Length: 191
Image (spheres, rainbow, N blue to C red):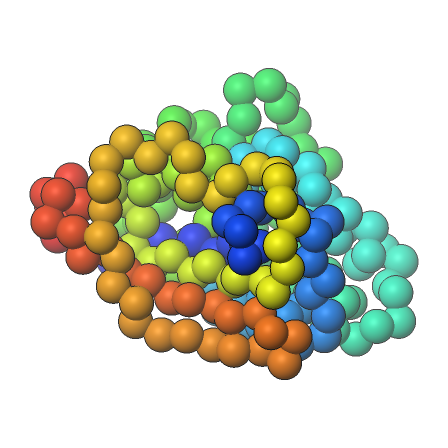
């Protein structure tokens, strides 16, 4: 069965703010490889609209290889967007979800293929609450912003996660790879 893998950036003080970090070549390459290893990506409306930026980079490359390669990876991967307000998407490789999050994810998991990436904070929280997340990759950047959107809020139950791997980048960022281990989480998922 396909794995549901969440990947997100976070500051040292626990906030999600893409404007607070400078990804650089090494991190763009990391995420391009992650995207290439998956078959589909799930986004909420806000993150999807932010990601549409990469469509413009494909159309007008920057000349920076890592940035342009990341844009091509983003362009190619099929995207499912969860939104109650967005009626259509302007990206050929994107579609709006036809089911609610739980039903769509359970249906996608049963399909043949590779991993399913989740890149939106709201979807990550919802999938943790539903017990449907198989892996959580948090890239912690070496910056403190002091305010912003906290990565984890509105979590309904305590879950315990096992650290299964780490990856350190020259910029000081560290990706922490976690898998759920909590008994309550396993009861939700049936695993």
